[in-house]
Each structure stands twice: as structure tokens, then as C-alpha cells.
Length: 288
Image (cartoon, rainbow, N blue to C red; front, side, top):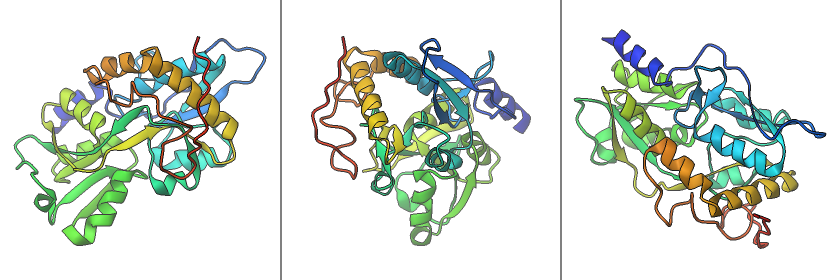
């Protein structure tokens, strides 16, 4: 049975490939060097292996469109999420194409664009498991997560209060597999990823979403790279205004976003309002 689960996950693009090639998108190569960014290439449907090589998903399509608006070629690397921010801060990447949850702690050390998606923390469980109705139902349980994420931080922050055991993995598919194998009671991740995994893995179902955990998913740059943040912010706002992000959201997540969802709403200023690094200067995006 476990082999069947593995085959299902592999066919859905939920299992990591041994090595993921670089993916090049955006405008044709011109006089400027390509921009560089990175994703977790096992985080379907945001980024996952393509049968044609490289990675595919919402993030790839989104930043293809962003790069074209900037008139730049973009090279996207795949790596474990836990290493992406350190690699960017070391100068390897201009920004991250991965969906990065904007937290106050992260916003103190990185510059973020405004959010282009909302995310909330949601649990996935194995079919037949007793559903989670509240945090109390997690008491004494083991929860699997992807390393270096707010999901890992939530489990760590609540481990003592709820008696939780943390299982952290280098990829989201490994965290899902731990639930299918019975090594973990639940997997905690973002709502889009949990729902996508459940839609393609019959024995895995989307369950309890933690109240009050809605965050921006934005694009980080280094703290000193204000020019790059501004270019990305302006491109993202234009792609909201012309409906591109909403169309990509419906393509990859299976439902059209509501009028007040982040895919459609340009936020004032640069960055997520109310968080460190926010610049209230009006965005002057030339979207023609």
C-alpha cells in the first residue's frame, strides 16, 4: 500500500526528484545579466518537477510574468527551503521566487514586496484519522513540517503547551509521507499546499485551519536592495491590475480568487503595510 501512495505522489509531482535542473523564464537574454532567484522545487502546486525538466507551478508562471514586465531573463534554482534565505543574503540570488510567509521577525531582516496571495496554516491528516476540531485535539501528537518554515515555528512555539512532537523534513512531500506512513498524526503547511496534496493523494485529506493565521505570501530581497524591491512591487501590482495573478491562481489552485483576495488587491506603498520595512510612498507603476 505504501508503494501505491509513493506512486500516487510521484505522479502528482509531490515527490522530490534527486536533482532539479535550473529553469529559465522571462524575456530573452539581452545586454543585462539574468536575474537569479530560487524556489523549493518540491512545494506543489507552487513549484514542483516538470516532465520536461526543471520546475513548474504557480510561482514559475508568476515570476515568468514578473520577469517579462521587467524585460529581464530570470534563472530559477531549486533548493531546500531552509537554505534559500541564507543563500540570498550571501548574494547568490537577487530575490526569492518561493512563496515566503511575511512575519514580523523576517521583515526585520529582509525587504518584502506586498503579498500576492494570502496563506493560512492548515493541517492535513490521513483519511480515517479522527478530525481535528481545535488545537486541543493535537495534544500529545506528532506533527510533520517542512524545515525552516513558519509551520515548524508554530509547532516549536506550541510544543510544550500541547505536548507536541516535531518531525521536520527537507521537503514538503516527505512531511506528507510521514502522515501516510503513520509516523505523524498531521502535517502542518500552507492552505494551498495542503489542499493540492489532498486533491491528488486519496489517503491524505485537508483538515483544520488554524484561526487567525492569515499572512501575506510575498517576495523577499536583501535589506539593502531597495531598488529590486521597488521593481518587483511595481511589476506585481501591474499583474494584479491586469488580472494575470488572478488567472494564475485559478489555474493552479482550482478556484477564482474573490474580489478582496490578495491576487486582485494592490496594497498602498511598498511592502506589507504595518510591518518593518514598509514604505508608504505611493507606488508609481507604469502598467501600460
